[in-house]
Every structure is written in C-alpha cells, then in structure tokens.
Image (cartoon, rainbow, N blue to C red):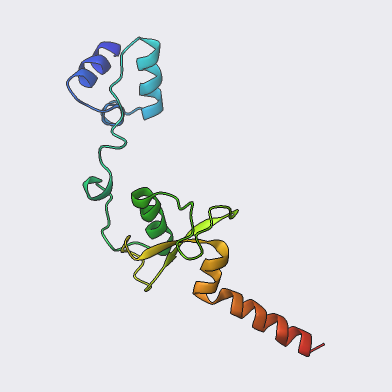
Length: 135
C-alpha cells in the first residue's frame, strides 16, 4: 500500500484524493507518508486566494466575511485616517457607504473615531440620559 500511495502522490494526486481513493482519512495518509519518508509537496495555501479559490463567492458574502477579505487585501489598520493617532489600543476598518463588499470603501479609524462615525457614541449618550431621567 505504501508504494501505491507513493506512486499516486508523485504523479500529482493530493493526500485528500489518495485518502478518498483508498477509503482512508487524509490525516492517516499524511501519517503514513511521514513514517515512510515520502517527501511532501508545498501546500496550495496562498496559490488559490481571492477569485482563484474554488470557494470564491464574489460579492455574495456576509458582513463578517467582507471584513476578513478587507484585512487580507488591505491589512490591519494601525493609524487613524481621521485624527491621525497611532497610539490607540484598537484600530478598525470603518465602512463609508454601507457597500461592504468594496474593499476601497473603508477608512482606517481608531475605535473612538469609528464610534463617532457610526453614531454609536450618540446612542450611548442618549441611552444614559434617558436612564438618568427615569430615576
């Protein structure tokens, strides 16, 4: 069986494809290959990113996945484009026009400026005012 695994792997089958063919798990095939000194190829990770990835959904993605795509394409923010600070504990991507799938529709902001942009700080202040009046 080891020779079969070696032959299939060297002609281009992936560990997953070999596992399916032999009715085994991919982890089991990987373990057998390591134990028997079968050198592995570099993984495909990184070569099939973005539109080349077989699970690419285009713009049919949710809010969370849009932010993951944004960080992958533009990196993690470390400076606020509004106030210019680099000393904030937290930086975030703030969407400008609710077009979440457009990675160019975001600005880097510190958490404070992002809350101001979204109006969240006004909601918190309004909530605190109504609570204090009702006491």
